[in-house]
Image (cartoon, rainbow, N blue to C red; front, top):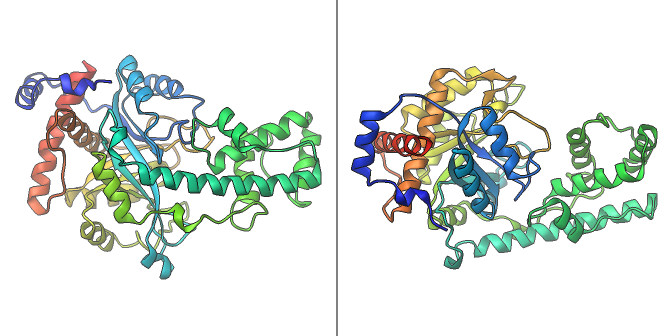
Length: 409
């Protein structure tokens, strides 16, 4: 499969075309969605593009856990809908020093646990390079954990109703593209129960027994709420089907960054920022310390999911890292069953101001320029320091605008 970016004019011609013909329009961007290839709110990738098109999102980034399997379909749909594609990935890792000190990073519940993204990976993916060999091992470790959860659930279900049983292979075939996650188990469990118990009263009674004689609290008409309650009561720590991940299910940050770079991508730290009570994790509570830590591991790209964050807090944080020359990206995730807008908002559906929208677009432009250069066999965006970083970022922003506008037009 060819990448259309390799067919665009060379850099000087492209930039000159943009300087003469650029629209100056700042399109809406969503640099981070999960697809059904890991788990998402979408029934398929086509639905994601339909919704993005309806909301006039012109740049969209796939960001699945541990897999690039969705890239070819994502690419085809981007051409069909004329939405510029960003090829990203996400991993879950462990920082053992922070874990030992009880420091939460960007997982509010698990000290030392870190989510980490790669942006602008090469497309087509070189499957023969061996880059993802370690990822395949991690995925199998994760599947072993899911199988153990299913076994515990089946033992409990058998005590309640011997006709109900979950099967890993069936869940994988019906509800997953390949990778089976905890959310797929919750989805399969909901569907199975609701197919076997038809009335609200019957369902409520069974769920009460499922929860050890505790009433269900979720609205039974809200599928996402029911599945989230399954996860919190049954599959998370303290639940009867909880299975702790094996140590082999996590890579350290150096391994993750090595995989991302070898796959042609840019290492990117996903920022959790403030919660609804204004709290931060220990790792993120001090912006200066966070900046220095990211500098020390050669990370100059961050991303946020603004629906989590207060608009003022978001603006304060983005302004700080923007001045430090960081590439900054925004997304929505869509990695739960809950339907959300494709357009990025701050917490409470508060619209982003023009400054934040511009920052989000500029960040996406850097990734677009990186992908363009990599597709042409040239060097992409690399970590630099000080004023050199700001100069480099500005160059990539302009090139990326030229790449995106050429594609959209």
